[in-house]
Amino acid sequence: MPHSLPSDKALVPFVSVDHMMQLIHHIGIERMLQGLADYIEADFKRWQLFDKTPRVASHSDEGVIELMPTSDGEVYGFKYVNGHPRNTADGLQTVTAFGLLAAVDTGYPVLLSEMTMLTALRTAAMSALVARHLAPKDATTMAMIGNGAQSEFQSLAMKAVCGITEVRLYDSDPDAIRKCAQNLAGQGLKVTSCITAEDAILGAQIITTCTADKQYATILTDNMVGAGVHINAIGGDCPGKTELAPAILHRADIFVEFPEQTRIEGEIQQLPADHPVTEIWEVLAGKASGRTSDKQITLFDSVGFAIEDFSALRYVLDHIDGTAFFHPLDLLADPDDPRDLFGMLQRAK
Image 1: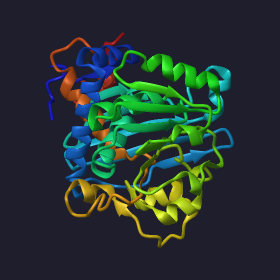
Image 2: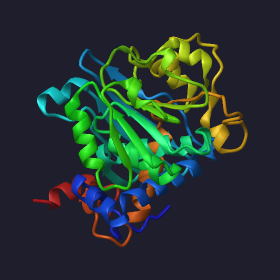
Image 3: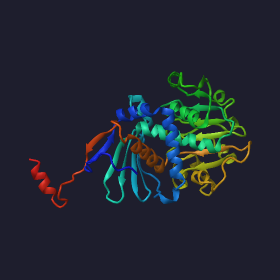
Image 4: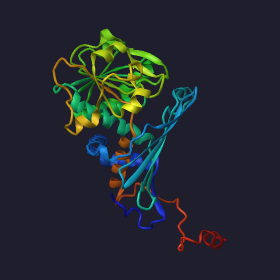
């Protein structure tokens, strides 16, 4: 991992929201989505090296605040993230986040970064990476049900990584559909706005659900899901929040990131604890099968996992080297004599 940013070991590179947006435009959003997918895949293939634990969550009636830590033995990373669905009514983001990487041998941070924008990118990259392995090989169309902050990123990731050419949009809020359609105009996708979820899934080989309300919901009913589709369920991400009818889960082959976390937060919280699932790292590493037939319904029950954030931060650290897309941040007290912290304070007079 690069450790030359910046040259003064007491300064930590900080990537602000503005710098993150500049970096995305510098690289190109589709190219960055492809790169993030590659980094995530590489890290999932060395899954067994990582510390793995369900995220530490503090739940309230309004939402959740979480810490997501992991380490591969050489680098430690964590993300702070919230999820507050009611925020949009006050003009605030549902999700905000920041993250950090540190060297395990010294404990010194080597990167601090915004992760609100980066989480949207890594979530989309993860969805598309999994779809590349689980969706029908000839998939050209995705239904995007839930057209909030994630929807454009999800659509472009499926285009960049899986080659879809059409996205069919539906949201219970017509303004959200219009927003998404306008943002995707000119992005190389055929965009179809739909008036019902049933209309949106017509002809779609990939169905992505991404709604925000913290409740047991039925965005997809059993009769809406035909044979051979891939479902990318990313909206259910905490206890008491789901999107799919339980009958769909019984018909599908289910793939998850980390079962211990997904059984608490994902769609499978609706199933018995012993219901079989496949860990997606096993598919990516060639240790388990993904899609095995044209009739199979595959379901990626995604709640997000710390290794994905670790991969995204690693990608950012690698790609800010030699650029101006970071601030050297005076984050660490680092006196010349490590035993004389008080003397450093006195000299600051």
